[in-house]
Amino acid sequence: MAKKVFTYKGKTLDELSTLSRDELAALFDSRARRTMMRGYPEEWKKAEAKILAKDRVKTHARELIILPRMVGKTVLVHNGKEFKEVRIQEEMIGQRLGEFALTRNNVRHSNPGVGATRSSSAASVR
Image 1 (cartoon, rainbow, N blue to C red):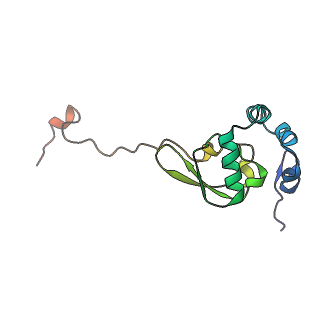
Image 2: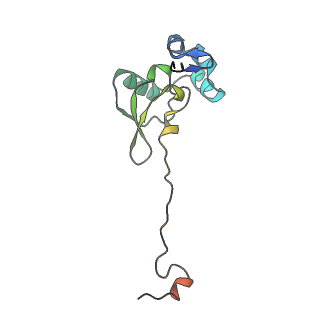
Image 3: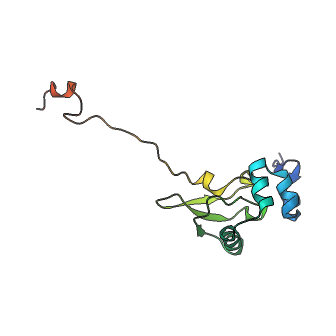
């Protein structure tokens, strides 16, 4: 069985990579489209150039929009404490880097300690 070809709004990855920035912006959702039409900040331009030049680049640019040319690259995105490794795939096109490096962890509590609740004072410590 043949592998399913990835398409984004009816365009293949090869077609997407040949589009200009304005044509690509027209395909994105409204938030990404407005950001691209307004113009990239210098920080994003530098981060994009580094990502395209080499693999495993560290960046703090969590708002950077993932473009088709970035597919297949590995980016280390800062989550506020450490750098999380993000492997860019076709399905991530049009989204932000920060969406894949979560800033909050799930809290898992264990059993309460002695004295933590009123009922634990009645429990035997032995």
